[in-house]
Length: 349
Ligand code: MN
Image 1 (cartoon, rainbow, N blue to C red):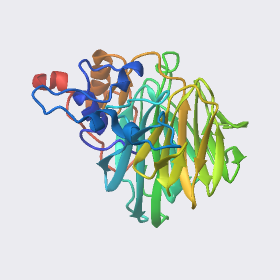
Image 2: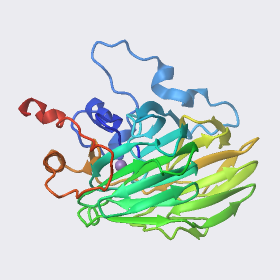
Image 3: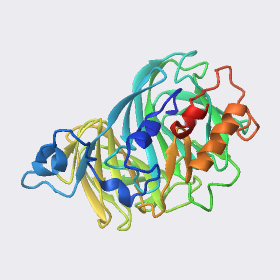
């Protein structure tokens, strides 16, 4: 859903990033990249909100600001990737979409576009959208349901208006980087209308991928990671896996995460080593919790592709441009999404 026409921020991030296009989770923690000749940032900017932690707040909760982007007719808040943090476990992309008004005939309106080496996880908290893909899938997704598409070696899809729904649309579009075992496999799509839930104090979690607090999603689950929605009005102790790192993304309301205030447009990051997180709110709120084992292999993201090398990206780009069959066809009336050649070869095209 988030994969928009033209240059994506994923691509921008890659361009702006530290030297070399690949990045690894361990290399992604450098929060500031020095620009020659630029005015040195003040210490507060270098260290970020950690400096501002007051008594009773946990200074080890890292708070990152999402950045704004435009996807089709939608405003999105992109939580990852960003320079300060590329990935959370294998989660490598997170766009909070909307809320925005859609009609029967106009919604996300993202035409057919390709993916490799990743899984798209679509989760709505309001409204409906229609997914079509090159496997022949045509699936309406409603709030509280899961669309999970595993791209493997290549798939294409569109995200469209439903033809019947009019109202507010809001959700989150996520990507999971597939590991070496899975990223060359055939594509796969699955939809789940019913997902495991678990009560967490004055809140409840719906687990869409992986397991949390004994609730396990029925969805395909290739690696050590979890994704869940938590609805809360009060206090919850969220069970964590000690070996996972976590990101907490607020979609609605205001929360306190281990004493640190978070609202929409921010991400709270927790490094591995915790078995629980205390989350409180003074009103109703909806948050997304992403967790997983920190990536131990570098990944290379460009446009809608997750790969390891420039050569792999070049191959995928050529296949999409030439429509050589690798990405199949989507039965969509929307126009294909095209993009310029990768920047390292732009002069050759
Ligand atoms: Mn997509």
